Image (cartoon, rainbow, N blue to C red; front, side, top):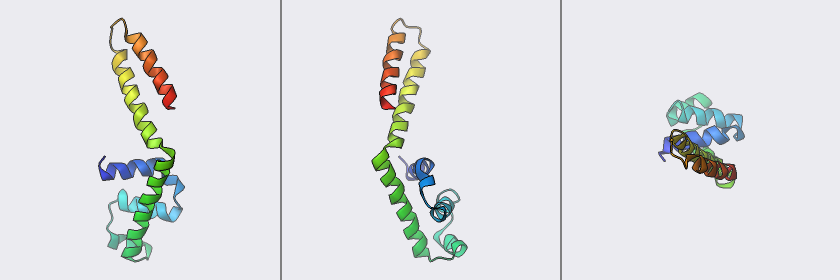
Length: 110
């Protein structure tokens, strides 16, 4: 997974668990692509402080995923729904059984 996509997913799922200060700086760094210099000027902290805070946020967000696995479950559900959708368009006689099987698998994922 590309780093930016991964950061966005982690933030989408767990960003609310960061402090307000962490969220503001992390959003500015990731979504607005501001440089360390721009962030340090805006928030009145050193570039090293900004860098450390962003790295700490990455580690915190990844730690939540390591424990909760919400993104992994989301990806699994997304894949199963795609397979169910593809089968729903089939007019084959065994499609209903396959869809029911995938639905059971989906329920186990949740």
